[in-house]
Length: 82
Length: 415
Ligand SMILES: Cc1cc2nc3c(=O)[nH]c(=O)nc-3n(C[C@H](O)[C@H](O)[C@H](O)COP(=O)(O)OP(=O)(O)OC[C@H]3O[C@@H](n4cnc5c(N)ncnc54)[C@H](O)[C@@H]3O)c2cc1C
Ligand SMILES: [Zn+2]
View (tube, rainbow over the protein chains, first blue to last red):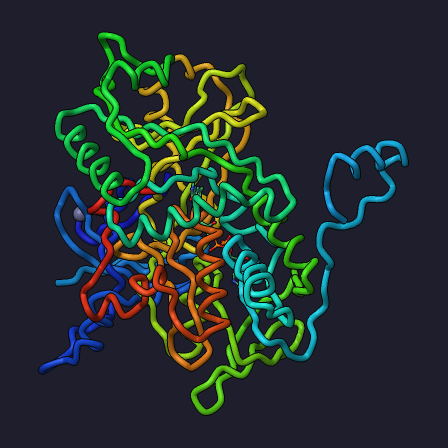
């Protein structure tokens, strides 16, 4: 069992967390084309190695950015989104 | 060498010294008419179909490890076509029909066992969903029907039906043509048949980059050197997004680990494939007597081929809820594979990026059952440069048009 760090509650069991989306995909500005909009909605990088992802800590309801390695599963950081 | 009763008898007499390797361990040539990245079932089937159906034999399959070492050799081998949307049924039933003739086609016993599959429901709401899927299957012309509690219970005699049962059988969907096949045999059978037609199966060859000139694919970079080609098929499961990204194509594919478990062998107790909607756990019994058990995805995106403990706990506690008598069983093996999951739980088949590049990926948790169709369709696209009618709805463009084929919502089944 792995522990993940919630910036608000501290280290907690991984089952308390839910993966939301990859971080750092800004919403397109103005009027995006349907290609740009679809890319924003659906495409991901799914990096092999270091990744920045938005997770939800279900008990406290906060979203935050977790830095992880997708090969080794090591967690390297966790920062609040607000 | 053709496998037959005659060859078996001859080799028995000659001390088994005449057997030859099933496929040639090829070295890369400078150039090919088509290259396929990924020696899983889909890549190997594609190469076979290119040679067999389209007469293209200057073809190579590049596999970074050993063939079938990806998800094709890691899955729980369930084959079925009980999907919801007509597009999906066309795809998966094509695969099932091809599977039905595959041992003969390849002259290789893939041990297809159409023992039937029960998707078990436990609540009136689940029964309604089952009814809806059974209706959809019948409208799509595929065998499938609603099964009432009594008949369903008779299919799985050891299932927990006591007063304490958390999930009592209320009935379910039955597909009689569903079943299992030997996964390694599917990879090896296609490899052997493709190799016999002149295809180069190159193991231990990792593709690191894709070359493009004037908007057209011109080759790949590998750890065994560059290889030229104008037609490139990517069938590398969870590694496909990373390869496509080399030519600026970003895909809607998340990668998760999916786990499987095998128990010690026991006497025959289950002669169908069973999926419990209540717990999400599913299982079948192998010819050796082992129980082959699976369930849902790990919920942590990963590229490491191993699973996490919470998913194991969920699958195994689900198993014990279904069959309390399995509490004494020992597990022999457990493993994970990295599966390529698309938001609508349907695969991606079609051209992408530079001319000459085609994708066959996004099979997620359920692409073993699709291998003969995936190979047929990718080969068709590589050979003709155009979609097959069955692959067209699965084009990447569906994310732009919004014409998703949402099987997660439609059939509500993970695999
Ligand atoms: C535990 C588990 C249970 C499953 N159960 C079922 C089931 O019951 N029924 C079902 O239908 N499906 C099931 N699946 C899904 C099924 O296994 C896959 O969808 C299917 O095998 C995908 O086949 P493929 O040929 O696309 O990929 P793979 O078999 O994964 O082949 C891709 C190959 O590409 C190679 N590769 C990757 N990168 C490179 C590179 N850069 N260069 C060269 N080669 C590369 C890999 O080494 C790999 O061999 C399950 C999967 C898992 C993990
Ligand atoms: Zn918290």
